[in-house]
Amino acid sequence: MGWSGIRELVLRPRVAELLWNTARLVLGTVACCAVLGLAAAWLVERSSVPARRVWHVLLVAPLAVPAFVNSYAWISLLPGLDTYAGALLIVTLSYFPFVYLPLAAAFRGLDPALEETARGLGLSSWAVFLRVQLPQLRVALLGGSLLVALHLLAEFGALQMLRYPTFTTAIYDQYRATFNGPGATMLAGVLVLLCLALLLAELRLRGRRGYAGTGRGAARPVRPVRLGPLTGPALLALAALVGLALVVPLGSLGYWMAAGASSALDWARLATTTGTTLALAAAAAAFTTAMAVPTGWLAVRARGRISTLLERSTYLGSAVPGIVVALALVTISIRATPWLYQTVPVLLAAYAILFLPRAIVTVRSAVAQAPPLYDDVAASLGSSAPDRLRRVTLPLLAPGIGAGAALVFLAVVTELTATLLLAPTGTTTLATAFWSASSALEYGAAAPYAVIMVLLSAPATVLLSHDARRGLTT
Image (cartoon, rainbow, N blue to C red):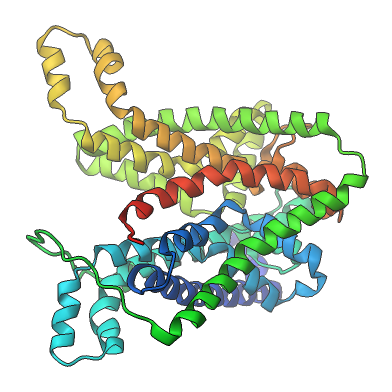
C-alpha cells in the first residue's frame, strides 16, 4: 500500500472516533473496576462485615458469566442500554472481579504490624489506608487494571450487541465487508499499538520499588475493622453489586428459558453443539498444554536469556485481541497454505496463541515444586530418559498440567471472536450458536446455549476462590 495508503486509512475521522470511543470506555471501566474492586476487597478482607466467605465467592462468581452473555441478559431486558453509560455499566459488572481477586490476595499478604505502628504514631484509619496499605497494593491494583483494559480492548460480543463501536467491532465489520481488506489490517495495527502502550504504561507505573518483607516469621492475625452502624450500608452495597453483576444475568437467563419453553427446543442441535464445543475445547486443552510443558520446563530447569525470551513471548500473543490473532491466521493460511484455511488445525493454533500463558503459569509452578533430585536418582539407577519422563516427571507435574488444561478448556468453551472467523464451515460451538440466535433477537432460543456456557464456566470460579476461602475467617 505504501505510506500514503496507510496514512489515508489511519489518519481519518472514523479512526479518531473509534479511538475516542475505545479510550473513554477503557478509562471509565478501569476507574470503576478499581474503585469497586478495592472497596469490595477491603470490606471482605479487613472489615467485620458478616459472612465474608460467602461474599468472597459471590464477588468472584460473575466471572462464570461471559461478558457477551451478560450483555445479552441486560439488553434483552432493557433495550435502551445501547449507550456509553450502558456499555460502561455492563463491562464494569463483567470485569471488576479481575481487580477484586488480586487485591483480596494482596490484602491477605499485608503485615498488620505496619498498620498498628502507623496508628500508634497517630495516623487516622484513612491516613493508614493511603500511606501504608495503598502503596503495598499498587502492584495488585495495576495488574488487575491491566487485565481489565486488555480484556476490554479484545471484547467484541458484548460491545457489538450493545452497538457501541470500538476498534474490535470495527475490525470485524471491515473483515466481513472486504474479507481481509487493508482497512481491517490497519485498524488491527492501531489496536496492537494500544495493547503495547497499555503494557508499557503498567510497567512504568508499577515502578521498581518493592514491599516484600524479610524474616516475616509468624504474621499477626488481622483484627477486622469494626463497622458499627455502617454494617447495614456495607451489606446493602455488597448486595447491590452482587445483584447487578450476578442475579440480573442469571435471572434474565431463567426468564428467557421459561419464555422460550413455548417454542420447540431443538435438543438434538443443542446436544450436537455442546459435543462439538467439548471436543474442540478438549483438543485445544491437550494441544496447548503439550506446548506449555517444554516451555515451562525450560523456564525453570534451564534458565537463561533464550528460555526467558521464549516464555515471555507467549504472553505477547495472549495480550493481543483474539480478532487480531484470527485475522493474522486468515492472512497466513490464505497466502501460504490455502488448503488449511477454515480448518480445525488453524482454529487450534488460534486457541494456543490466545491461551498458552494460562497453561504455562500452572506448569511452571508445578516444575518449580518438583525436586530434580528424583529424576537424578532414577537416572543413577539406570532409567532411560523416556522412562524417567513417564514414571517420574509427568506424575510430579500432573497437578499443574491438569490445572492448566482445565483453564484452557474453560476459556475455549466461551471463546467467540476467533471462532467466528476461523471455525470450519458448518462447525457451530455454544458461543457461535448463542451469538447467531441473539443477533437475530431470538432471546429464548439463545438462552439454553448461554446456560450451558455458564454451567461449564462455573468450575473456574470454584478454582479461583478455593485458596482464598481457606485463608478467610468467619
